[in-house]
Image (cartoon, rainbow, N blue to C red; front, side, top):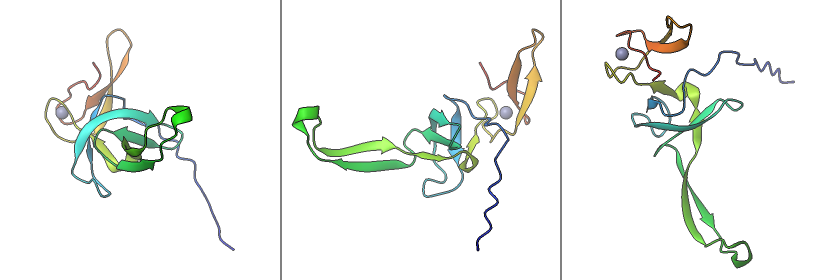
Length: 117
Ligand SMILES: [Zn+2]
């Protein structure tokens, strides 16, 4: 009998679309790229040129699909990427700042630069 205590990960994803991230685990470890999309449900992010999967597709003229190999970025787990701070170039440990107008923005804990534009 297997006990499967699947804890729901409650922490919110700190990564946003368009962030520059570094991959820290998996076969693409060390690569950097822009976040193309985020899947909050699956806790995955799609990073350009990272986790590229090749799909061999069969031609299907009735659906106007050309056969061949389609390269597509697959999602990787958010815990395998770190946001890179554009100001200091380090992996940002993300903190939060509240702007004078009340807007909450993400900031780099190293150099205090705001990560959100
Ligand atoms: Zn920084």
